[in-house]
Length: 203
Image (cartoon, rainbow, N blue to C red; front, side, top):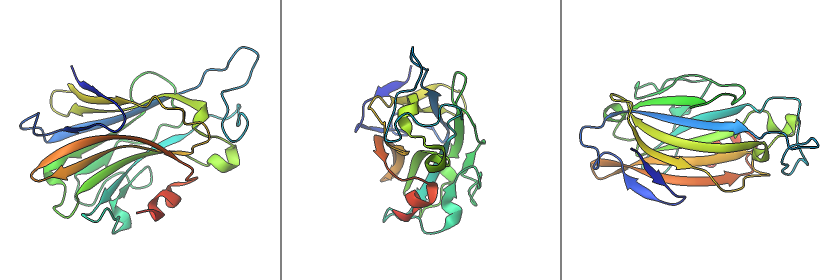
């Protein structure tokens, strides 16, 4: 049984799980169900575009010891599914968020992460959110979880329970080095960044 975290909590990932190297990071979300009488829960767009699916995209920023993204190849997303070192692999884009289970998955071999990379930041943003007039008020049941890549046993789960209406990006969680071990931090921060390129500018 995995450990359920609350926002802001940090936990040892590898120290508590000796030998853990290959992990799967799953991210999930669901479209908000239409309420009786029509309409969705709304954010800054006053209800958003009800006719279009909300296309959420999960990405990983591979940061150095100064929390900087030093090259574009260290951004792993639907347009760059594999890091140059092979340690981070995105399994592909989910366009709607429909269905049970993880919507997008990222496979990580911690032992292959280059020594200059100190932090992996997991981000979910809404694709083309301005034109579609969509925000995270249209999304519910968002979570991030970490499983043992060998046994598929869930190690950590963090359910994002805050209200994110009006936000277009979620900084979901981080996996970072601590001496010779790796830790996980539950972040759950919503931002107004309207695209992945805007997020990258912050790093």
